[in-house]
Image (cartoon, rainbow, N blue to C red; front, side):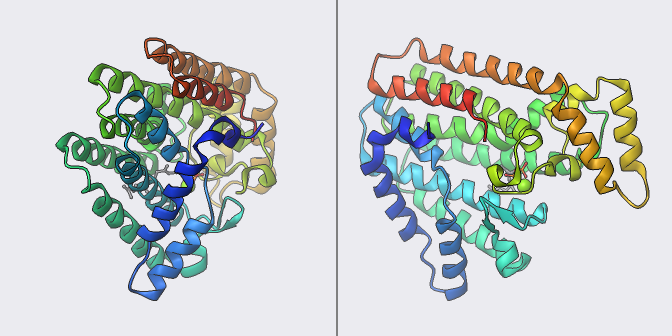
Length: 323
Ligand code: FPP
Ligand code: MG
């Protein structure tokens, strides 16, 4: 089953958001317009807008307000990926060349800045200070997460807490914020806003853990980007942390990466195969499942609206994701 099947009934609203995204990225300068259009056309699941729409159903839903929030959040997400691909020197994403690959680092940085500025322009439609505060705090955390990730690269001695804090910042908070801001835009009661925020947070944690597992277990065709990249780039993920508990693996890993010529292809492939076949993979899935259970628990006290069942279905889909 495809993820989009779980929220097929939102097609009309999602089409309106897509149209608003096209309008939002229009720029006077042809190069910015071209690069931003390429970025938008590269697609994406638009899962943040989906959460905005669904969480708004627990209050007085207003499509214009929801659309503003959804566009703003999706733009922030897009901008952060353009910048991230410069930092990671990534040539492909979602099976297509990245902006940095097509236009170079400089244009990619400007494109990210431009899209981010548009996101901020969009959100001014909402007058509630709470919305602005929530959004800016999330951006601060997102940027901090990225710097932490760079700082922690190739540090094989970090622990589970370091990893969880990093994925909270780089992924879970923006999803949690999408849920909360969808709720704020619809004046959802505060107690529900907090529940939806936590639902988004737990879903985000689970989603990122599965992403990190798939980086090891899935193929390049399935991922739309090179597989095994986290290990190569020295990004320590959950399966690696579990695998490193085995002293032999830890020694092999640190020896392979301490060679002056860098890790060889053969060693890297061997390390990946060892992790793939190890207990680290099911262990990682178990932690992801615990987050999913927590996400589902958060929904329990919410009214029995269709949106609640869709949020439950999305949680279950994420748990079963294998590519
Ligand atoms: C992807 O991680 C990176 C992120 C989700 C966050 C990137 C954030 C920034 C660059 C900070 C900039 C912030 C703003 C507000 C514009 P990854 O490299 O592990 O995943 P990938 O394989 O999808 O690239
Ligand atoms: Mg990256």
